Structures are given as structure tokens and as C-alpha cells.
Image (cartoon, rainbow, N blue to C red):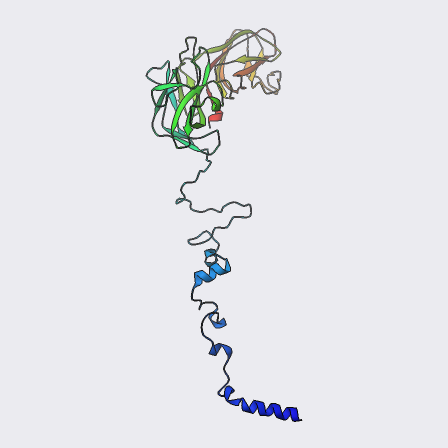
Length: 334
């Protein structure tokens, strides 16, 4: 009882300190972090964000509209957005234009390349832009610039296929050169690390470039050569070399002639395909069916192997066939 009396006396003595009406804690507080302000009363928002380690991204919504943060889709790819303001990005695109070749003023030794763009084969992403037309000579050692030599190594030989490459440096310098192989890395001039094949040309018996015309990735001989004149086509498939680039596969465009020889069926086909005996009015069909008393002609497009070859087969021995190569489509230039 004495203890209770003592406690009541103490409370009465302290009563002035609690005078006045009851006030909630917030009504007496000022400054930051009031719950009713929902953090809107922070004096230094950037500093608070930095202290929390959440960065400025916390202020933006996810989406593809203005001031949105772009989010990758379920496959990890970017959604469709307007990238017109992006700069300094290597797209890795295979887009191509221009770089069309033709015989130049000295048609036997010079090739002109029109202005254009190609992506380098060496890294499959760096673009090379040839700002203006360039002429390179096949009869002189390589030297930078238009009108100068183009042989990346050695000297020009007769009866030889040469691949023409666009070559480039990391600083954007672009030139061109000739080489017999498909990978000129070992013979590129100092500082050049990029390359892309843009055409192939062939020299004749005097080491002069054979005349041609190029339309896109199609090449047409000015003078159509006869590549096969055989009277011994037989029932076993045989390979024959025709006038198209070596080292790459192309689609050869051929004219053919067959003499009157009475009921013989013949096919011309891709060497990588299993040989099938031609058949008239049955699979696999017949490209040529001869008859007595009439010579027949036609044309055909055939995929070659990398040795510039096509295959021929007949239903009978001693079949007669001639092939003329009009040109080719270089499918690897697409």
C-alpha cells in the first residue's frame, strides 16, 4: 500500500510535464521520413537513391515508349524499337551493294570495281565501304590506290582463275587485290586484316583476262566457250571441267547440243549427287533424248563442285554431246 501511495505522489509531481492535449508523434516531428509524406519530403533525393544503391532506373517504367526502360523478351532478344539514333554499332549485317566488276580501259589486264559495301569474311561483322570506283591491274604487284597493281602475291599466269578481293584496314581504308586462293590472310599487305571476295576472273593462254559482264552475282562470258565435245559419253557417270570459277560452287548456265543418234537419253548433273541412269517418261527423267535424223539443242543450269566440274551420263555408250558455258551465278557472293 505504501508503494502505491508513493507512485501516485510521483505522478502528481510530474503532471506539469504532460500538460496540454494529447498529440500524435508525427504532429510533433519535422524533417524527413514522415509516413504521411511517403518519402516525398526527402531533401536530397539523388543522394538517398545513391545511398540505397538503386540508381536512376527506379524512376522509369519498363516498355518501348518514350522514357521507358527496354526489357528483353522471353527469348533474350530486344523487342521492336526505333534504333535510328544508335551510332557506333557494328551490326554484323550481310547487307551488300555495288562492287560490280568489269573489264576496264586495258580490258586484258584491268578490272574496275564500282563503289559499294561488303561485310568482311575475316570476322563476319566489320563493314568495308569502297567510296568510289577503283581499278586494279592483274599484271602488276599490289600497290595501294586505284590504277595500281593488284596482285597480292606472285605474278599473273596463263589459264588461271583469280579471285578478286575487297580488302580493308581497321581504320576504314579499303582497297582490292587478286589472289588464287579463297583466304588471302597470309598475303594481305601490311595493316590490312579484312577481306571479302567480290568476283573471280580467268586468264587465257596469254595471261590476259577473259572478257565478261557481271549483273549482280551473275557473270556472262563475252565469248561463250565450248567445254565439252564428246562422242564417248557412256553409261558410267564422268566428270568434266567447264569454264566457271574453281574453289567455289556456282550454278553453271550451259547450252547443249546432241547429234542425231536414235533414242539415247542423257543427263547432266551435280557431281555430288548419286548418279542415276536417265529414263524417258519415268524417274529420274532425261535432259536429252536423241532421235534418228535430227540434231537437238537446249540449255540447262547445273550446280558445280569446287573443281569447276559437272557430271554426264547416258543410257548408251558412244553418245555424242557438246556443252557450251554461257556463264555462271556465284551463289557465295549473295
